[in-house]
Length: 42
Length: 324
Image 1: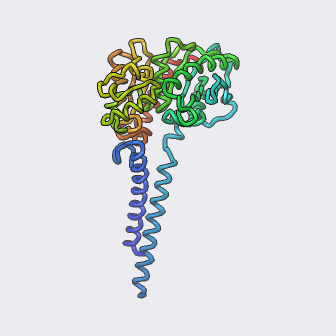
Image 2 (image 1 turned 45 degrees about the vertical axis):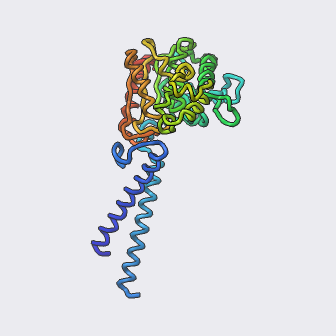
Image 3 (image 1 turned 60 degrees about the vertical axis):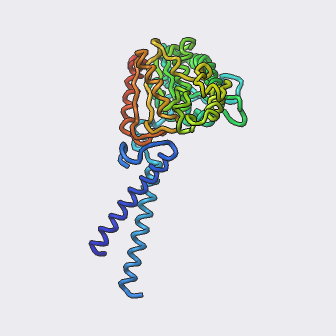
């Protein structure tokens, strides 16, 4: 594995983790109300 | 396929799998892991107290309560903390709040979770007013049962979340004068305390007098017509379910929390309660969750503030130290 591929893999994992939490937050906000950003980290 | 292309394709699959795994894992963690849950949870064991479930207080199927009594039954008197469950007046159960009731019990209070008849196909006549009357009828039974078990109740706090918060506020402001146990404080989260159609915009009630008349009629158990909504002439009809209308200078200290984005218990409806508390100089703390909705789900920092305030209120008005 080259260093470049390793960095891309880490970035993909971070992106997945961020989007996963944001997706849940967005779904909860849709049901209950709430802002997408601010307050809790993600 | 050339070797280089095969390698790129393999890495493409690895990236995709890593993304899906990270996305799913983080979503599941977000859904099921609350970093604050552990901080306020109690690991219950029988040395802490006893739990008596489904004790009756009336004839109705739902007229039951659970009583949590601390292990130490040597004191002359105890404080009672009542917590009323959420569920939009149509669902929910006292067992939903077992963890919280255990926590209050572990603090030395007698704690009670009380069910009330829910509005639905089985009970189309149930409404906020009848539910509040059931809560009112339950308190003497809670007192009697606690005394029978050796826990005389001298003071009480009433609380709840959402629908339970609404009922707690009604008991605290409307029914406290006739309570067999002196009410010392009320604390609640996201409970509707007022019913003015212009505040209930998320339900479209500000634009539809017909919808407002129907919903408020169901909630209050009184006949409210479209005409009354149009002319803004229905205060008397919703008075018995509007906690803020019962606030006066003698009202009990209040700790309440609302989410600025709440669209279930519309945030606009909270202002009447806050104004009434301020105008009547009732000791109170209003905690606003600026990024949250009905679940108060996006402001853990404010939740911690609420819990700190709650501990301070309990100590001040319910005498935690005094009775421990």
